[in-house]
Amino acid sequence: MTKVFIGGSRRVSRLGATIRKRLDAIIQKRLPVIVGDANGADKAVQQYLFSRLYEDVEVFCSGSVCRNNVGNWQTRFIDAGTQSSGFLFYAAKDRVMAREATYGFMIWDGKSTGTLLNVLRLLQQGKKVALYSVPEKKFIELKAMDQWQDFMSVLSGELRSETERKAALEDRASRKHAQASFFPTAPA
Image (cartoon, rainbow, N blue to C red; front, side):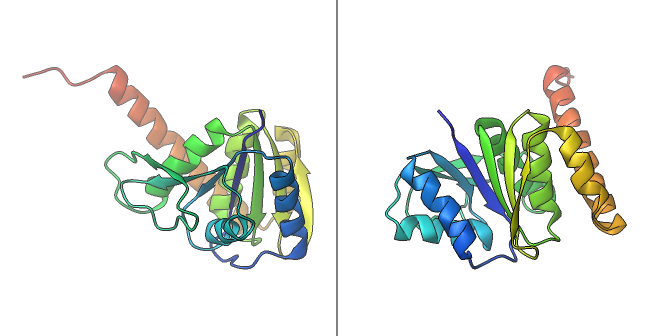
């Protein structure tokens, strides 16, 4: 069954009619939804799903505190390792959501690298993404990595560089974590 990872930019706090219509289609099909706990798009989506009395929602949180769970839905706390805040801390839950989802629906403010990284995570796993660009007021359907490259090529150099920097940082951190678990330190 399709499980939809819905996420987006923290600067997006209102959902336009086009976004609500897409959410209504998800509700009508009774698709399970996984969503983060951040302010902005995550919270706005939670509020909308709660207003529609939708129950098939799971909220993912990094660490042991959930910032938002409007509908008091099932909550999943993701261990972020030694991090206690910042990019890598919150990326921990995003990686798990991308892994568990079969489809992505991202609401983008045109600037958020976190939202772009969620799109990248999903595409790298061969999963399709509907990216709603708030500034352009349109959906961009991404189905494969070659479309990602085309999409990124039209963005500002600064936004591309920052997205690539964060992707590389996350990649290094996950390789370091995997290596540490394969080669535990020997007792002295």
